[in-house]
Image (cartoon, rainbow, N blue to C red):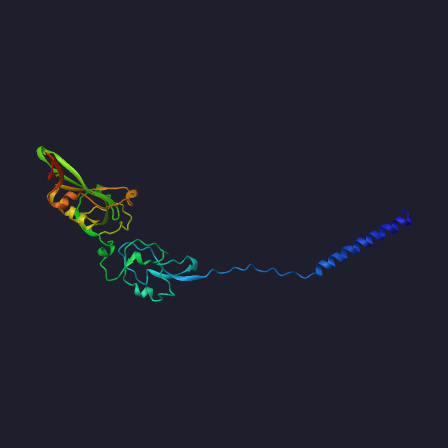
Length: 265
């Protein structure tokens, strides 16, 4: 090999070695940049009173069923019980009656509970409503499948002449408050509530209609309605029973004169 080529190759090898050395030196001496941890900002919270366990209708509140829980501050709405406003709420609400079902972790709201001095049944009644009981059986109570908070129609059956029968729906879409002494579904998971009486939620006029129908009817039957009907109105009923005579007033025109006549049902 010619001396010139040897010299050129030697210079190239030395240059490559120097370049590698310099690169390693620069890399090894460069300071490591610190890795900053992501900053997580904690959302402001408030202590809100919630149910510690699921609470059925009619149960009473106590220290074992309530607790304070962190709640996002922007999620606190009117009606929530907060520790900043009512720090002694757990003690103050001791013995209060649950009038609507509450689930574990659900905030306690004033409209779902009533004062501890209230009786359970009266506390379940909305303002202006009455609780009236009527006898039922498996045959007249939809085979025992009627449960508290279901909706029913009240059908009156009467015996007419020549062994004929007449029927009339005297009340429609009525809420069942209780079956016997049960004001909620069976806690053991049974889906029927066969009892001797059903307590219905009625207006004062509806209570009068049912009282008259109980005296007139050979049988009162409860017809179970779909849960989809819960939002339909339950006002009114067989108004002709309010007169107490079992008839309704109609107008009759004779020779141009208008008179009222009571027609018997």
